[in-house]
Each structure stands twice: as C-alpha cells, then as structure tokens.
Amino acid sequence: MGMRSTALGGWHRSIIALAAAIADGDPHQLDARVKAAIVAGIPPLAIDELLLQSVLTVGWPRALVAAGAWRAAIGAPAQNGTADLDYAEHAEWTHRGEITCAAIYGDHYSRLRANVRALHPALEAWMLTEGYGRTLSRPGLEVKLRELCTVAQTAVLRTPRQLHSHLLGALRAGATFAEIEATLDVTDPMLPQAQRDQVAVLWQRVRAAWGAAE
Picture 1 (cartoon, rainbow, N blue to C red):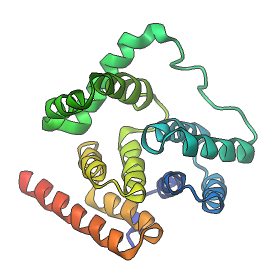
Picture 2: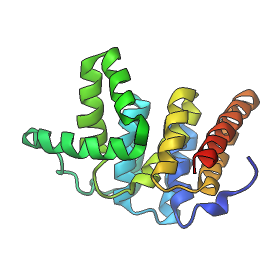
Picture 3: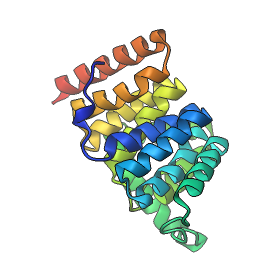
Picture 4: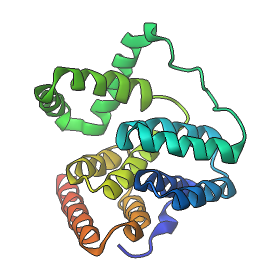
C-alpha cells in the first residue's frame, strides 16, 4: 500500500494498530500495542469502546485477553462501565441500531437485513440490537474510527466479504481514501504476501466503484 500512515492524525493510527493486534491474537504484539496506546495518549474511554466492539468481530476469547492486557496496563476500571446494562433499554438499542446500521450500509441496508435474516432470524435481531445498537452506537468512539478499526480486524482475520462491507462502511462514515489506505498499511506486516495482494485488489475495486458512484 505504501507508507501513508500520516493520513491518520493524532492517536488514530495507534488505536487501529491495537485493533489489528487484538484480531491477530499474538500476546507479545498485543502487549506492545497496549504500551504504544498509552504512550500515544489514546483516551481510555476510546480503548474501552474498542474492546467492547471487538467482541463482535474477533469473539469473546481474544476480546477478553485484550481487555485483561489493557486493565493490567492502565491500572484503572473501565470508563462508562455501567452504561447499556439495563435490558429495559432493548427498544432503544434496536432503534439506534437501525439508524447506525442504515448509515453504514446505505442502499444495501435492506438487502443486508434480508440476507442475515435468511441465515437465521436471531442473527438479524442480534446484529441490530446487540451489535449496531447496544455496542456500536455507544459514545466514546466515533463511527468512522469504529469502522476503520473493523477494517483492520477483518483484514487480519482474512474475511474478505466482511472486509468489503466495512471498507464501504468506512467510506460512508466519512473516511477518506488516504485514511483507509493508512489503515491497510497497519495490517500489511501482519499478513502473508498473497493475502496482502488480495486485500489490495479488493480495496482498489471498492475505491473504483465508489469513485464511479460519486
């Protein structure tokens, strides 16, 4: 991809690198990224939010390992730790999930819901209420940066269909081409060359289609 990391201002590159390390699962790299996050001055609330959303992408085991590494390094409890614990807010989670999911998927929102519903109706409900509503619509981390972190994680996990969706989601959330390319630069060293090439081809297709639609 080339060296474009300067496109990610402030601590944004550092939190994306941490997101990628969470997905990769290597404990040494995770510890290094946690230390780098502290040095970079990432707001602790932003990392707490990354940890929560990582459950959706990488699963509980790696998210819990990352949370343990972060808590040990920071030596402080989670910020905003009691928010969204009341299941009486279920309807509100669903409402805000529909808004966030529609913003990220744009014209493909209805088709996404139909496709996921065909896999299992519970998956559609959980995606909207628990995923996009309860988790991804929380304050503390802007939607654009959440999507860039998910781009990094889906690239590392080698899930091209999900990567494709979240490349588009990042663009819809306001990410620039340069910010996405800088995000993919972060993940490049973590992938074998063949996978890097596949990611690069996928991104070029998404970029070309987005430009044609503008």
